[in-house]
Amino acid sequence: MINVIGLGYIGLPTALMLASKGNNVVGTDYNKELVETLNTGKTTFEEEGLETLFLEAVAENIKFTTEYESSDMYIVTVPTPYEKDNKQIDPSFVISAVEAVMNNCKKGAIVVIESTVSPGTIDKFVRPIIKSKNFKIGEDIHLVHAPERILPGNMIHELKYNSRTIGADSTEIGEKVKAIYQTFCEAEIVVTDIRTAEMTKVVENTFRDINIAFANELTKICRSDDMDVHEIIKIANMHPRVNILNPGPGVGGHCISVDPWFLVGDYPGLTNIILTAREINDSMPEFVLERIHTIMKEHNMKDFSRVGLYGLTYKQDVDDIRESPTLQLLENMEKHLAPALKVYDPMINKKIVESQYLSFDEFLNEIDFMVVMVSHSHLKQHIDKLNGKLILDTQNIISGANTL
Image 1 (cartoon, helix red, strand yellow):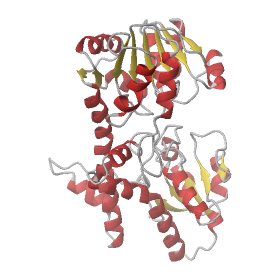
Image 2 (tube, rainbow, N blue to C red):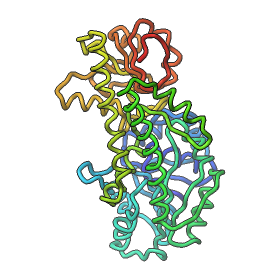
Image 3 (cartoon, rainbow, N blue to C red):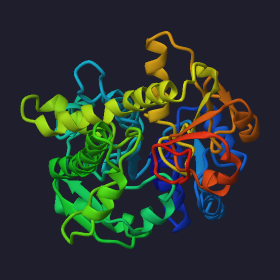
C-alpha cells in the first residue's frame, strides 16, 4: 500500500494517478474539510482532467483520511516555504509529516519525499528524525527523494509525460520506487543519489527564474527609452541559439518564486546572479504599480477607484494564487496605506480580497483603466467588452489604440 501525505496541488493528482493505475493508495491530509470534500466525490481545485482522473481512482477504491496508515511506501508532498528573513527553507511541514510517518510505519517501509527541498535538507532534518525513533536507515527505513515536476494547468499530462528523478541511498531501492512511478509515468526516470536529486530540482527552477529576470530587465530598459520589448524579443528569438522568455508583472507559484531562495539562503556570497534575478522578479509588481501611476498622470486621471486589475492567480487558466504578482502588488499598496485597486479573476469564484468582484461585467462598469495581470483564456474571449477602456497589458495579448 502507498500512503500519500498531503493532498494539495501535487499530492492529490499524484495519489489519483497512482490509484487509477491499480496501486493500492490512501491519501492523507490534516485538513478535515478537504478530506470530507474528497470523500463526497468532489475535487478540491480546478484542473483540466482532474475530475476524470478522480473517477478512475475512486473506481480502483482509493481512500481519503486524516489518519496516517501503516504502509509499505509513503510519498510526502507537503509545502516547503522559506523563511522571509534569511531565505532558508522552512522544513517544518516535512518534519511534521516524517515524524507522523515514523509513528505509524512498519519496518522496511520506503519514505519518498516529493516536496521540493534545498540541497542537504534530507541529511539535516529528515535523517535525524528517523534515527531518533531508533530506526536504522537502509534497513528499517529506506529514504528516497523524488521531486515533483508538474505545472498547474497541465498537471495530468505532465505526470504522465515529464521525466522524473529518483534520488536514493541504494540503487536497489531507487529501482523499486522507479517501478512504482513507471505504472503511470511514460517518460524517462533517472535514478541517482539524494543530494543530486535535491539540487537538480532547485537548479531547474532557478534556471527559469534567471531567464524570466532577463526578460523583465529588458522590459525596464526598453520602457526607459521608449522601445517595444516584445518586438525586440521576437526578432532576437529568430536567432537559432536565442530563446528569451516573455516578460511579465512578476513571478508567482510555489516553485520558481520560492526555490531559488533556498540556494541564496544556503550559499550566501556564492549566489550573486541568482539573488539579482530574484530581486528583479520580485520588483516587477512595484514596477507595474509605477507604470499605473505614470499612465494616470499622462491621461490626467486622478481617481484610483476607477482602476482595475484583471487576474489574481499566478498564471493563466488556473485557480492557484500562491505568490501571485497581483497579491504582491496589493500588498505593496497596503504598505503605503493606499486603498486597494479593484480586482477580477474568472478562475476565483469566492472573495479572497476585499476589493474583488465576482462579475466581470460589474467589474468593467466600475473601471476606466484596466491592467492585465494574467492572460486567462476568458479575457481573450471577451476582448470586445474592453472597448473604450484604457489598457495596460503586462501579458502582451491585447492590441489596440488604447493599449499600453
